[in-house]
Image (tube, rainbow, N blue to C red; front, top):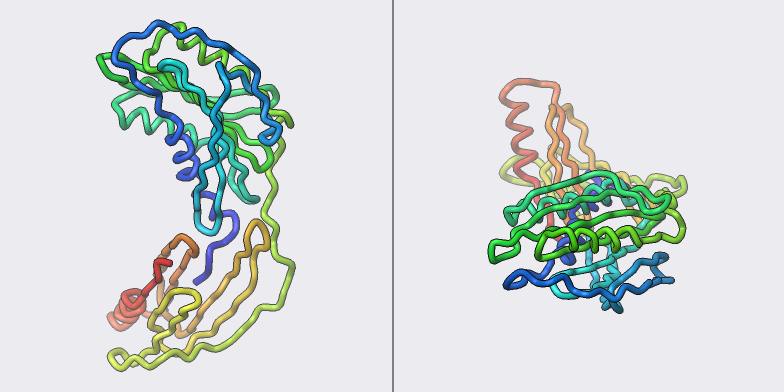
Amino acid sequence: MGTLKGRTFFQGGRRLLLSLLLLSATAPAAAGRQAAPKLDWREFTSEAGGFSVKFPGEPRLSRPQMERGPLTLARNLHEVTVGDYNFAMDYVDMPAGFDPELALEGGISGLSNHALARGGRVLTNGKAMSGACEGREAVVSVPSGSGRTGFMQARAFYSGQRYYMIFFGAGDDHPAARAVARTYLDSLVIRDACRAPRLPAAAPPAAVARSTVEGRPDAATGWRLIESAEHGFSVLMPGAARRESAQAQVQPFPVFHHEYVHESGMRGRVQLYATPRRAYIFLAITRGRGPAGAADLERFFSSVRVSPR
């Protein structure tokens, strides 16, 4: 049984980046067909974000925060709305160890799933380029009211620890809107040409801390209740448990690995649990195949209790 380990935490990036996209990817629907608005294109440069892009006006900047497990991530969302055109450019600085390919896939899948849920269609889904940066792109159609069909187009890139999403949406899908989308998305320049991300920093070798956890006798089963308020769990074991603890990661946040083990020849079953702060693995193995071994396994796993905190 161990706490959350390094890289696996960031494989939740698919859900994270999907939420980034859907907070931006909603083009306003107009009551009827509108004439294509006149656009005053101007170059916008973000020194902090390391990018430049053409917006048809001065973008609004907001910095909503998201909490994901032990991390607080700040979005940097730039938006302009002209008529039923919506322009959005978002970036987030991710911690070391995030999976960039999974992040790109998750962001684009978010757009596709959003369209399908609204009765739309995925028109294209594939590779995108911005200078030397390779990313992902999708174009989707969506019903937008009054019998009209709108469309949304988004591209996702990463550079180092930074994730970028550029988005355009229109309430009516017509050639002029498609041309505006191309002008906007093609104008994106990521300044440092998309560097590779950093890896998590492993903890230096250190002695493993070992101790014995006696637990409390359980009168109903004759086993012992092994519990830890610090680590948020309890479980029945046939006897005292050996605890081993070590630090597995230093950055971007400390990760510790804890094992509670009682060896008595049990058989063949594993259960996994996850909370916002920890991942748990409960494993039992027995050599016997008779009813007594099966009963021991059931007793062990039915006794598992995990704190949601």
